[in-house]
Length: 243
Length: 243
Image 1 (cartoon, rainbow over the protein chains, first blue to last red):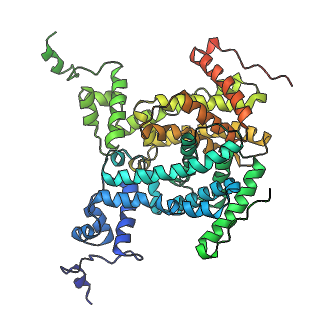
Image 2 (image 1 turned 135 degrees about the horizontal axis):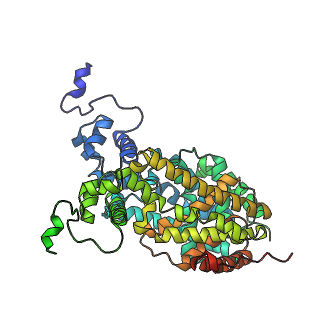
Image 3 (image 1 turned 30 degrees about the vertical axis):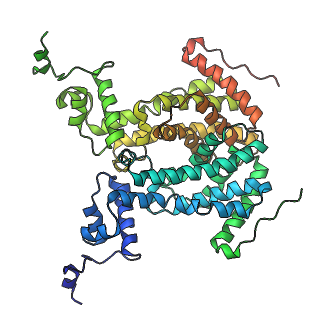
């Protein structure tokens, strides 16, 4: 195949692709890089298409437009964690609510630490927030549901420790603490397991746990997280504590 | 004076001003509004000048350019708190470190709650971060010094409670919690004294305080903050606790 064939109409790939992934994934990767370096408003779909090496028309085959690409990117910061909430709650007995909260925090930290180009920095972008379209609303909804999950687990734990913060406030404080991962990455840090343990421990202390209880919960939650990574079938539920 | 005189050369004000403030303050106000609604890169100095009702040349009399305006705006989110750190530490005896930390958090929350147009949302803007000029570096330096103040007070309190988080990590976690004010405002909330008390209480729990100790520290710190607002001369130092 000659190199000329790459620019032939009907063969939309203009330059060799940058490696892994489906065209859709490559569009998301390039858009994440451009949005987080130049800004959302300043990036055109043409630039995204050029970065991937496809025609603009091909990009529109995968996404209705820039807003839909943004919505798909923002979803990657919330969905993977949100999809685990039920499993986390099912896995840990209610008496071990501190382990459930800790596991939720660890899973969320992992999601935010892995998301390409730290797209969480786009949450508060003026040009993103002012794009009050349905796509952005669906992200806000997902983010709000995840905050509710923190509020629910956090409030149960806080009540046990005599901490009186209203559940919605506590939920916001917990997700704010976890989203410190976005700040750490924006400041140029690689987020490692030490960061994860410190942030998860902070979440437990926000709900009134002391250092000993936090340390124990982190140990249990880390073990469960490792099992979750190996696939749901391999997970041994956390034993119910002897009372 | 005829209305025509307003457009006469040498009288740069093109339209009536929007009320309070010096021309410099009006430039900052308009820039804050435009940067946080349209984005930094998408806003020109001409637009800022037009919004204030002055000529672009007059804007350059006050600021060297857009970067300097941004730096001045970012400084308003950090400087007022930073300027109080020494006073806070001097006001509270070392035995009452929880009150000092709580007062620092309350002062910082107040700063972030008041700053016009919630310009803290600009911290992580890609087009701001990529503008790696000296102006932005001086903001990062100020922010880093404030984080150090949190780390210093927080680590002393944490040690007392057997919390083992490394001081720089604890400092980042504390300022992250306080900067939840930016998120609250970005989500459309007015930040009131209930929010302030909850966030300050969260900071204390992050350092290992229980609810009782946090409540007591919040009471003392709130009283000191009210005195600080009345002016330094009216402040009665926090009494040294009887041991």
